[in-house]
Length: 280
Image (cartoon, rainbow, N blue to C red; front, side):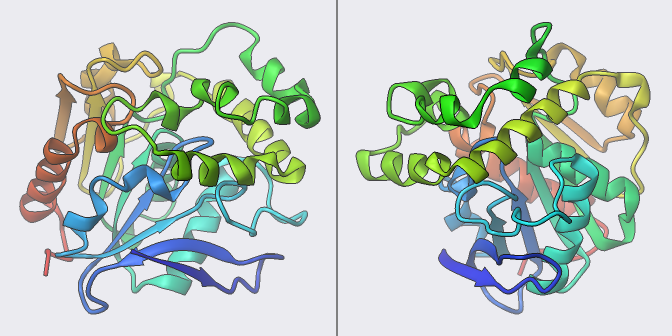
């Protein structure tokens, strides 16, 4: 997987992605969760890149993305869905297979609802549109000063953030430093905090979920203490999902906690349920 930057005329900075696999293979775009970045798929991308053109972007404000700068980029799910369309136009030939984890699943759901013809399949993993949050969480994200939050951007403070809760293969020292460094930037950190407020404000109204005009599967980890695993079947029914799977040995991040099972589930779904773009 190579680090690639794509110029983005619409934004004030460039897209940053990790890209691998045959250029003529069907495109598989994979979106990470809040305050993670493209490393979130490190345990599955090598396998998937044998059959797909795998594109794993850093979401706006995360990792080494620069598109978050500028007034046209607002920390809202709808804005990030439009951003995804721009990224796909720049990096792949639509329609594509789309995987979204946590925040990435919220973006994937919004994009699939808005423009289903752009996608061959959707896989929503630990979807962030149905999280369990304490009262006042949105206010906390809204008013936490970035300068104060930056003080926690170290090896100790970051243990509450997603990659430090992964149950599979811990980040090594070099990976930890590379992960933490971008989040020490105040502009970037402020954007991700405001985006966090947007996420928790939208949790969790199942009545608002709509069927998607794209073949869809939903994946949860049974040990997830962040999203509503108990609502998995209802979410699948409301989305008219082809498949709903709950991995018994996973927490919030099945691609990290159960990479073999996740890869099997994704490949099987695409081979049997997707409407286009079969694996190379």
